[in-house]
Image 1: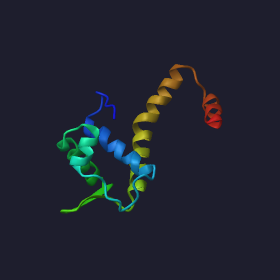
Image 2: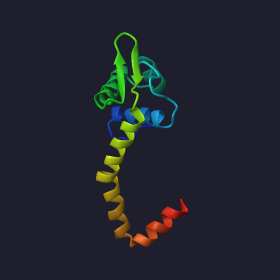
Image 3: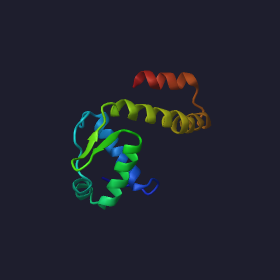
Image 4: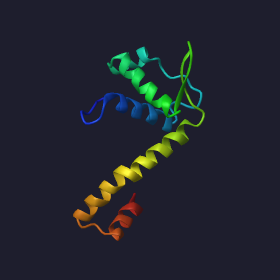
Length: 117
């Protein structure tokens, strides 16, 4: 995994875990690798992985079965979509719209691009 310096590593790892859930690689109630296992895979300190797990657990995307490990919550995909849609609408989309206006795009240009995709 390539990390960028703009975003904390634990959040980048949390995003990668969410992508695995959204892609269907990890399904509801699946056990996810331990912090040690996942840390070794990524070459990251297990404490950083635990921070990612704590972040996702606070958002109810994963949960911990004490002594067994972390598991994907039953409605994890729906929660992830809700959180990411809100972030997109509040942060990403306004930046895109601002950039499009600066470049002279019109709403019709956007619709034409949307329809091609």
